[in-house]
Image (cartoon, rainbow, N blue to C red):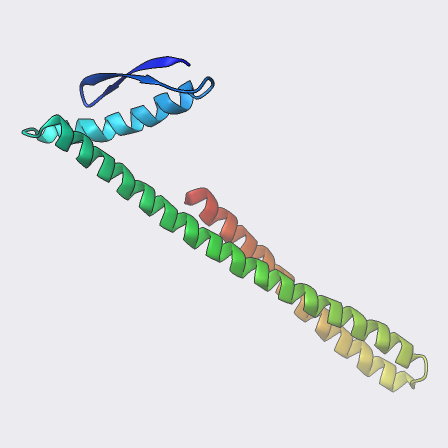
Length: 147
């Protein structure tokens, strides 16, 4: 079991860890040390209090990141719901188009032209919905990258 020498808040600690966990532990210790150094700079605190406050500062930062992650997950769920709704609408439009084609075989030219116009409107609406989905997906991706 590897042992690491870590410096946190100006103090040196010897810590054992599982093999392969060294980098992760060193990174975590670096984050903890950065917070501890801020507390040490204030001065006048015991080692226990310094480490307690540094831990609380890290926990607060972690809680903020968790809130951001939860918000991003909610945005993603909402986007997925919109995609499912859009897919259902697209399936309905496709079904209507097939039905219209079947009916059109028995219609007059004027009736066919009217159906074509209605179909064009439906295709336009579907295109708009797809644009909205793409914009929403871009927004969710941007929020995920920023978060």
